[in-house]
Length: 228
Image (cartoon, rainbow, N blue to C red; front, side, top):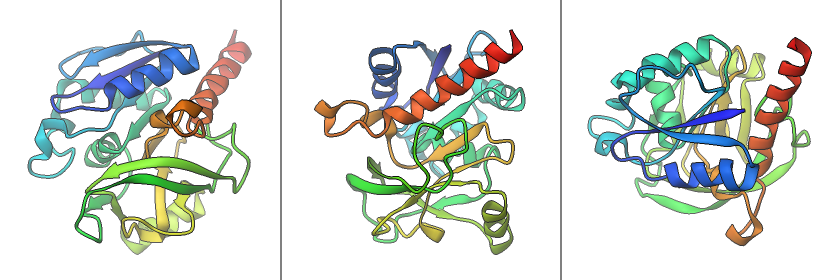
């Protein structure tokens, strides 16, 4: 399986993502600049955190119009796994690949620390290596992670089991329904504010995030064995 790590001007978690995939997961990975016009050779797409285009206008609002995003949409429509972390989640929201929007943290302060998450849905291609309701520890680092959507959208997220991760114990940013990560209805696009790529080795303080990447590879291999 080969991953693309999309790099926008202002991305600052691309190296973390690359390291997680190459050195900890042991999979193929390549940096892809934001003006790339084809992602056909990649099996999975990763949108890292950072401050794409300086977070001008809104976080992710400019990156959403990059050339490569047309290819990200194309990959998502083809059923390829697409993961957006932090700013990557914000970009997926701006691009309409996931429902809802991000607001400033309730405290109006940038938050950088580890938090506990609960695995609400372990039946996805991103979470199958976790136990149902498992509590994991993953770092956050954001100023605009306060997820919001209208009541109708929230009801649909719950009904379709699209809420994959919630904050456990305490909500660091005021996110609606303690939401930390959601998937699309098709189940192949995940956006989450916490950084699993920063929790892939005990030397980093914990390895709870590694299972997310292992889940993607496991699902991909099973699908290709079946289709072989």
